[in-house]
Length: 114
Length: 117
Figure 1 (spheres, helix red, strand yellow):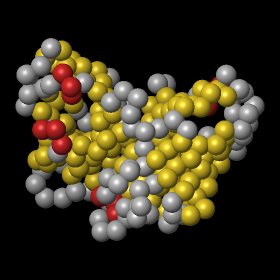
Figure 2 (cartoon, chains in turn purple, green):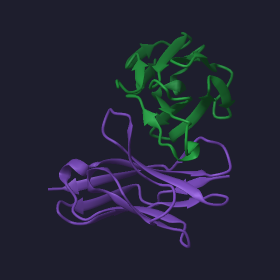
Figure 3 (tube, one colour):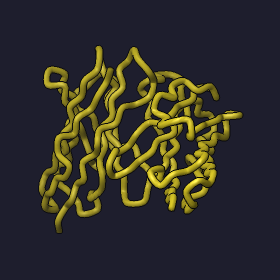
Figure 4 (cartoon, helix red, strand yellow):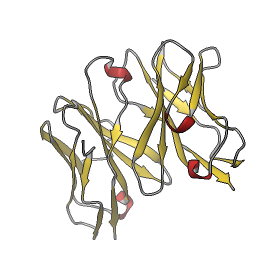
């Protein structure tokens, strides 16, 4: 079985400040990990993924995420938040041996205040 | 590339009516996924296909829901009869399966907002 937890329903941050959106996962073996963003009335858009190699993954729009195997975490980060980053963020996981479909977290709403 | 195409974008129907949602995946993508998103339940995987074959339909709520993929460029999700609790946004996504199949990201369509009165 595979699962994802996003412990925060909402994260509030001031524009220009760093942001972190938390994600922890549970899989058998090594994971594939993904972050997606959803803007209002839109489908999910891929941000970044961890497959193998460097634990720090850089993605679209200045976002990055750090894979931490010992803590089974894959937190999304950005050094300086923009108001336009306000959206719903989903973490997703897939184990390397099981079914191909991703398991998504419940989502975290990021609100960046000007 | 036009991305994943879904139609209609909005559907309003009355309880008991049949509803058909349509999806055209990105050309060359071999995997197709149907999701449902609601405030209460979040994003749920309903069913997914690989090379037009249903692989996992364990997320399909009940027999009122059915999905088909007659060819690589088209899929439908049908609800018959529809009920008010089916009101949700339904997303279709596709993914390539070459290379690192499990590590390929999914590309989502814009969704169909279904309202059942």
